Length: 115
Image (cartoon, rainbow, N blue to C red; front, side, top):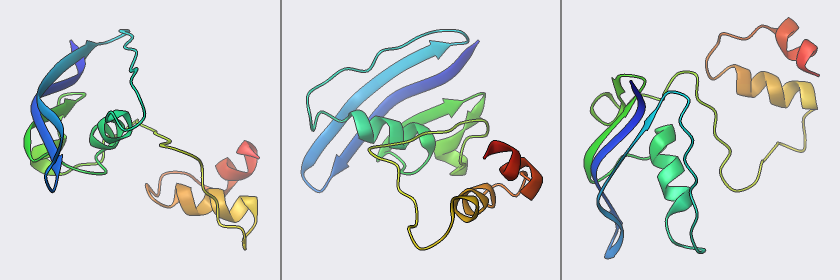
């Protein structure tokens, strides 16, 4: 079973083509390495997989959910692109609580246990 499948992905920003007809699959327990020069599209790839952006064309399926068709944020997926950012005018607990509120599945007690 494939946990990630990208099929014929086209992605461009204005006139800059990032991906053209890109496809790949990753099966459960599979490992993929993503290597490339600065500006080659690695961060864009992860933003696509995380559902932060949608491709101009093509299909992305994660855990049997078509995130391009339904514009879903994939469950059980975490991604940190570039560098972490936390609000500096609130506490660590408040930052974690804010992040936990995105899914509304994590209690204050769970956040405290994480700290």
